[in-house]
Length: 401
Ligand SMILES: N[C@@H](CCC(=O)N[C@@H](CS)C(=O)NCC(=O)O)C(=O)O
Image (cartoon, rainbow, N blue to C red):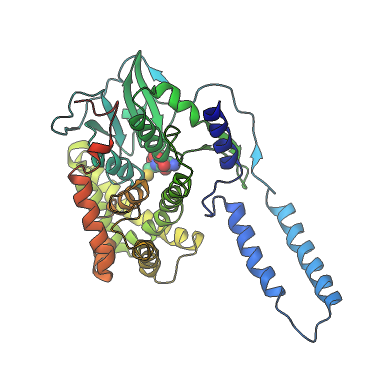
């Protein structure tokens, strides 16, 4: 019962917007900025009477309110959601060959885990960092980013997707943060069943501010390790969730404007994607060059509009440096090696995974040259991930040896 209560409270918290204190929705961004204006109104101005302040505020508020009522949908609108499980169990594996097998010595015999990915997608890099750190053996299927035939079998059309062997087939998991939370939950409870765990992470459809139907996964930053929990763990868990969300909602948005900052950098980024994704193997020569040149050209312009959308600084490098320094300064304040303490936690793995997606780009080199503490943290993380430092914490079902 206590467990169900805890889960219910978790679900309610997440519906209320989570506990991270981060801006989780565009509406909150608008709200936060509007608050910025209203604090300016609160400055004491001796010659202005309180009546005129109220009058101006009311007029201003009406204008702004009227504008949003007319030109913007006032809220994300609920849409009907079917009562069906979001995550399917496939009776057999889709008929697509693995491009690569990652085998951790001594841990080759657990249930089969298959990752469908683009190699330089930050969300896929995050999942790989997680699997590698905990010493999970897995197969990789590289998805062709243009035709995406390798995920034709799936209703969910983004990557990463993971399949995990369970009784009766292969359990599908979608969304990087959900994948990480569900698998970590499984690792922490030997008796848990992945096909039950997925029910903690329903994908809910809604209409966004522009009226487009979108979906998001509830509780995706919550590891449901309810057993042996002390109250003092709550703050630690909340801090971990905060950084995971920050990696997805803040850090990741600094990447595109940086790697596509100039036409040369955009071309360099696409050449690196081609190398990391072995496009030579996956595409004909003309296709590969078409994707590289057209992709770089298009992304250069998209990078500019993303810079505006996410309000990055004029020199976008500064935004990337600032965010990364903000992160390592928080570690420094704690006096630890990682945000998780002396061992990386899911927050560290998320930030590392996101940054590792641009490792072959100038933006990454510039970032490392700009800050020795960011570089030091990144190198420490690389060692921890590549040496499967979390293997002894991955106690259960995924890494049976
Ligand atoms: N929230 C998702 C986002 C995944 C996502 O946006 N993936 C991109 C690749 S980076 C994608 O698959 N986009 C659809 C496409 O390529 O058609 C997650 O965390 O996994």
